Length: 192
Image (cartoon, rainbow, N blue to C red):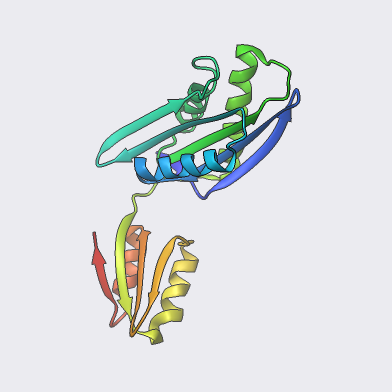
């Protein structure tokens, strides 16, 4: 099972239509819909904002594809086929299309949306999926550099930080990072 490394986008033109492909790793249906809504708001003037996502949430696979006004199965479904081809989970792809005046036909649409999804996914980099755990860590300022170095080495970037008497981070990490953090003296770590 694979996923994508990070949020990325690509843009290309075919027969005067502009296709912008966005991809983001996500861990919940709600997170996928927040991303979709953000892209739709950003490109509210676009002809179409097509999307697909596939997520494992609470042990269940959740898959959804939307053609957003394109002919049935010519937009969302080709994105899903890219997911199948690369065995991808826990990601959302949104393809924005600005119509250029030349109709592409059903085959052209399928190829264009599949290409946009493939390019965005490859730009993000496909990686082996690793289950992440939500944790909260609390530590003294003297541990800041040590903890930040561990997070940087493991490419953990999505962190909610709070600096008060002690520092608190809320983040999602794999089991290896949890093990490294547990080895540090005087770090309070709460999983869940």
